[in-house]
Image 1: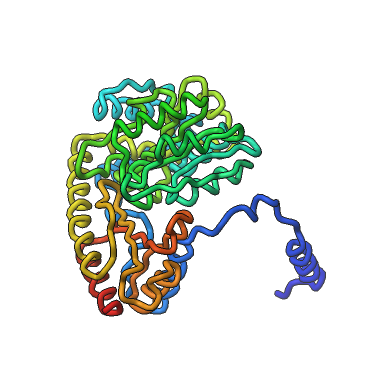
Image 2 (image 1 turned 135 degrees about the horizontal axis):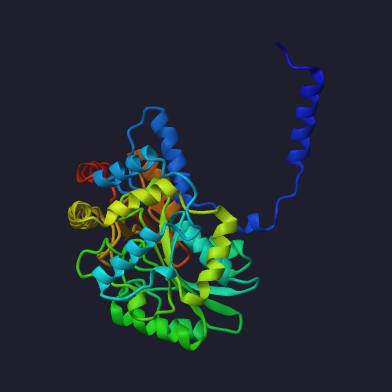
Length: 408
């Protein structure tokens, strides 16, 4: 049966009207996420039959542990699939509260815990609650690129402050204090960091949080790689400042990336505002994922996760000297996450002076996907590439040899 001509005409007119619609000005402020653009190109090459070693996306090759998967299936089978409270299941908020007691020996009331639809939703809620039009928000350069976009979406202005490898790419309190002005509302940082894999130690973090508090600003601290630390025990901003807004996630350490589940810890006075925003923006976090996440804190699951953490450390210890042997400068051995932020300008390749060009060369010539430093800021960004060692050590070895073959 053919469609009536009138229907076709309506469809055409609808398309013409849509193409002429005026986009909101905020869209122009949002820059493409290069890691995802490279993922798209990687997918196209893979679809054409090319064998690509993907070291571009920060996604563990380990998926959710068995007990977590079984908990999700159990929730489905017993019909526990309806909306939860906008702040998340009370049982999961209590489990997260207990996690802070067990791991950091600090008390965090379950009432201050807000389970979210991934750490991205947590960051969006925090920015929606705290960033007003024209507010300036300070963050380190380099940093996770979406943090800048979250601020821009809510009318704020992200301001990147250069960091140095000699200081583990951490925000310096003096630099923050000097940069602070009447429009500055607060800071956003991550520790361990994406893209550098470097953590702020306790004294560093405490001093920075104190400097921000004295200015009356907010501090949003992204701790999604917190449990993926290798050379020291992890820490939390909540140990130094009870008013810090802390973001965490079930994606990285717990291996639940596609389950879209994270959490916020906020001061008591912020809870009603955050809850109201969550109710309106996405109703509640995914219920099945929440029931599954309860199994993350079982002793059996934690044992599996610790073995995985040790495997990530083994990969780090392999890739750092391997990259250096090709000519990459790894100025700081990362102590967390699963990233290497490597300076590429001394590598023997025609494109090495420009990280974007070099990233494309590695993809198309060596079939290795990495992310250019320009995704993460402006400070020496053309000189750096980010390698994610969230793939097997066998794949890392293949990638190293492929890169070596076009760089010597």
